View 1 (cartoon, rainbow, N blue to C red):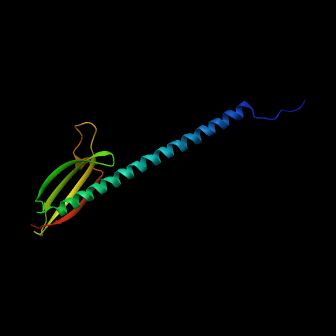
View 2: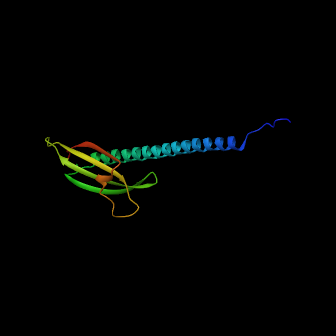
View 3: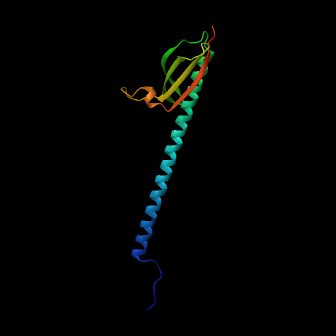
Length: 129
């Protein structure tokens, strides 16, 4: 009798099990990579928004006084919230400016911007009249 060439059912099942484990691991790794890339994109956009907000306030005449301001804007196809805080410093000619940036929640009732911010940027304003 001549022996037949080929794989047994058990060998095929073991190979399929190994493939399923490897494919699952590759899929999980690629999903995590996409999540990290999206988070990096959001943090980069939040940084740009904060820097733009600081520049806007630095160019304003007269220089804005001490206080707080919230603002909603669209950038990069998303809605964002900013919270700006201007404080006095020991030098009367300079004010400290901090800007927190967060994605605007789809539903109301979210935490304050300061608590859910993706980026906080601090700058300074020269007091001009």
